[in-house]
Length: 574
Image (cartoon, rainbow, N blue to C red):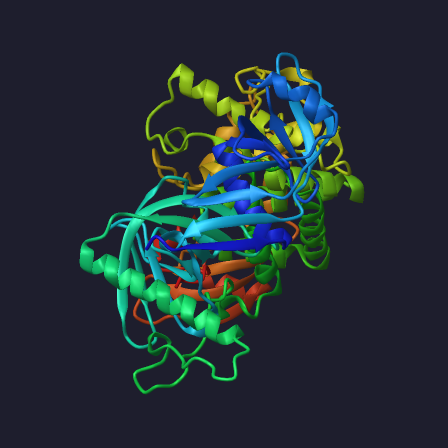
């Protein structure tokens, strides 16, 4: 157990995976090249990935002259029980900041790690056939995950982004269940230590630390780690007498297992709907963007531009298809569903007023991310079922500034439009809104529009403290409060989307329930998909009706909650 292993790391991604936790910990030691034994405590303050690192030597100012003179040095720290040492570094320049001594230094060409075998993480590849399921607590469903590596102290998992946004650092988990190809099972508990995206923003990487195991469980874990390491060594071995395959990674019949992979993000239930498939991809971008924000990152300019262009292209091809596709997201978490719903409808409403393409892109992009700053707020504020006190309200207001501060990289995004869409969505004409209590003419036209779109989308969805409002009641509320909401934009919204919008489940006087797919010029359904008659629930229907054929369903009574009738366009989660 005391045997050590030394590894030199030069690949960019691998270096980052060691440097990031070292930076989060902050405290490291600095040793000058060629010196033996002597080192000084400094702070690894920040990392500019693949470019530079920032150190703070305020507590050890005597180092300043030697470092600024160009003397090379190493940084030494500990990560998960391993000692990490950088290659030789030099100072590139001093960063001006009152009261602090911060230096920008070269990025390490290589890292060396020394760790006990007890903390060594054995790599696990998909073709090794290890099935894994992750559960937070007894009330939560199992999450499908991939096991990337395994050690006595913890592991690294790959999760779908939609699942990872529910996790936070230091969150306990009840069970990680591993099943090896030979039938061996291993059940572990512990804590989530970090949650971040992969380099392509397609999946999440979750680092876990294991709780203490009984002696039998520890022995089993150690066996699995050793066999995984042995299997990895066997695959890269150039020996004339190669190692035999580990029986842990063979089926009981002695065969190679089938590779293990995460389930597809977009199930077959949306395979025939192009717009819905793209919406799921954009939803994944929003999940990844939330994780990036929570890890201190900014809004990804290029990705936001690309996904905004996709939404605008889909709307240009068929606005009705895009509006209908929003219903497929009905089981997604509220922040994702809300952001996409507001973005699609705000862009559609602005397009109806004749705004140019550049303005539409800025409106859509800003609306898509307008609420993501809430991901940086304490969960207790967002989940509160009662009125917020003054301190909590002050915290809630901060989400607007959070997201505006992370937009520095989006130089293509008009600050004027972003200020209205993001900064004024929660303002009210009478000055009762936030973040600054703006009112009257100080609220821009797009800000007034955005307030209407945001409130309709929010009030027609359930919250912890209330049920969803019927759409017609929301319209009455907005029109009944002209001191808060611009009634011109409310009327435009009603005219544009109607009382039975595309994507809603409409009820008719005959008892028929039908998904609304298209509206006529007067905002009435002109194409519906008939799925049920409440007077005969045993028989599901599947019929497309258009124009005059819809009259046979009787009078339109309004829209209803699909879940109340066991109906949904949203695909079931695995």
